[in-house]
Length: 146
Image (spheres, one colour):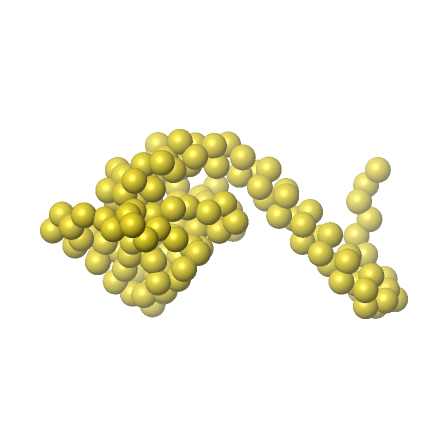
């Protein structure tokens, strides 16, 4: 049986409670479809998870989404100020930068194996700071993982 999508008029005819429930069911359905589409790539990322954590960053599944244009995973992060720490952990774990995306809010893309991971940075220069930390061989602070 095909899923019936509600028209604007159908939605307006619903009570506010029914509208809220319908909206949440649609959001949940879309996220579950997105997770299903990411299943293989998430399994490959899971293999890398322990090493990333050893290098100073803990990944969380709810912060991972599919990039709109490709099979790349997007990681929005738990704490926005941790973009340098995440980039440093990825570089220390053997990930390489395949796209620097040098905009005002850069989103560099890393690759390891068949996994592409784009991270959202809130600070310009986050990737450069991570690369500098690698170059100066500063050890990661693993005592305060998010």
